[in-house]
Image (cartoon, rainbow, N blue to C red; front, side, top):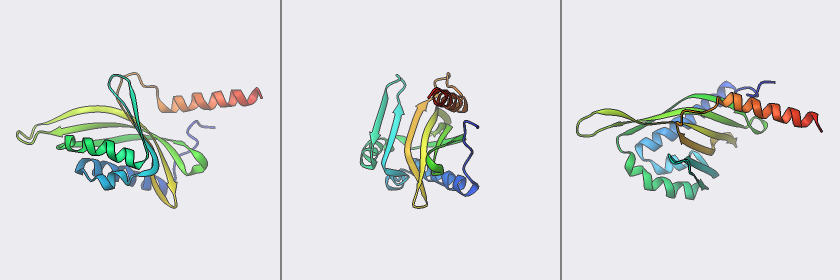
Length: 167
């Protein structure tokens, strides 16, 4: 069996695509209500800092408090996310999603555009009552030595198969 466990059907995949679009537009237009609305109330937002420390905010109120303090600093930024890879989660109603992201910034005075950051994310999206939202959004700057997500998933599947064979 593939480590991926399949991919979302077209309707789910498009709904997940809409979730990412809503998230990014809300982030870049500083719409905190729409931004927090892309997370389930029990979700986690995780960020790996440049020094390697990992910070976690759990629950929509905590995610809101953290995000409100950062929204003003993103004026002129646009966030892009692409190259999604899906690995099946629980009972086909959640997916682990790995992707690349980068940000660009336009200086208001000069109009000059620059790339300000690159990274990858390790997200979990889940459908509840027909609606997709983030259960986890984990962002990390691109460190340059990342293993392929499907290789990681295959290693996990192989370990489970080996453990099951020994039982």
